[in-house]
Length: 371
Image 1 (cartoon, rainbow, N blue to C red):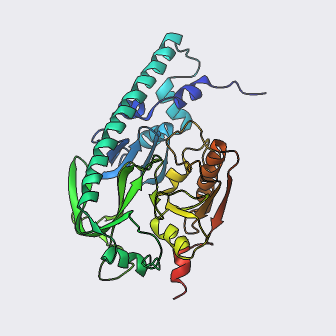
Image 2 (image 1 turned 180 degrees about the vertical axis):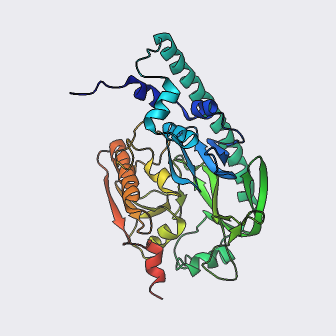
Image 3 (image 1 turned 120 degrees about the vertical axis):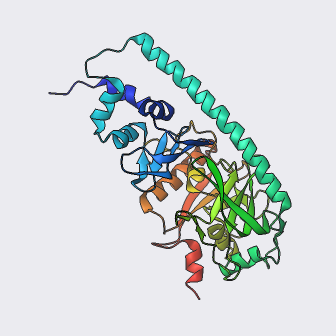
């Protein structure tokens, strides 16, 4: 006998991250654009900034107790220590209790208002961050001959002999690494950095990608350690808006073939190797930007309502995504597939495929292994 569908489940799935955070009374979170960062709400985990929830995407993660995270329903399970149906009941009440249609409509309108407020707040933050990034970019020094160029050369991405100006790169000899932790912005490190310009879909400056480097060891990033907690932090950070943008290594001019890797080193490796003669080489910054949202986890099917994800310019008729082999294979392939399908939906005549570096390595690793 077929079970009667439980309408509470679908209602629970419409709950926004902001609604759930409010209902759970999660405290101590700091708003940073779309993110809410602070202590983990799971009893016994806590911390200061190990938990983050993206109120626009409706996802969360805790880098200590659950690095994969999940949706608002999974957050209820985490915070209350309950199972899926327990989370549904906590949000929607006991099964069989009808909800007034007016209440359903009230929730729908409240969600629309909350989404609008969230997007407006995120847009204001993106513009503020873009202006800050532009100030840093203007203060930076030329890339050619700098320790930043030596860093890339140490990664076997020697750009000095190539016929490009590499106007997308600059260098800062003393650049602070500032991160918002709990309610305070803290400087965790200060040192030399490679600064890369991010250009939006319209070609305009939209932000910077920062890589702190160790000038004493070409090819090595700086080690960023919080002196208070001993926590390690990534040596790379984006400031400004990256969605839909790219780091255009070969300049703004568009060619019919576009090769795109996730990072500067991977994309630069393909460029130095002249993998596809006459192609443009742009770095996609991260897989989420190259992919956009998917319909279902690791489905490879793009959510076409995501209008901010990367799309190649109209002049591109062949798009090649580089798949690094040092990332989890299934989600990596799904994201790249979703991104290519999104691009082909926008341009049905587009040819697109994935070039894979190999198991356990990224494309830059292949060059370094030749030493």
